[in-house]
Length: 86
Image 1 (cartoon, rainbow, N blue to C red):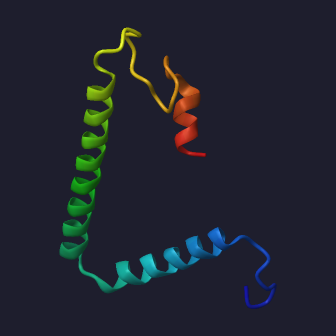
Image 2 (image 1 turned 120 degrees about the horizontal axis):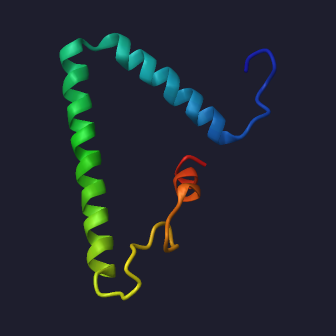
């Protein structure tokens, strides 16, 4: 960036900054802190995903379609999984 300038999107600069900050944080903490952080973040992620899934299933429980609505469409396929990573 110093030599070529900044010609990209702001999203790319933000991701680069997050990468540098993550590297520094990882180098400055010990293995016990990293393990605690991974367990904490993982537990929060699983709890949020479980809650979101539970809310969606309760909302759709009485529908007669028979299949859950995935990303706004019934009969979710692989393309719906690809949308997660787009």
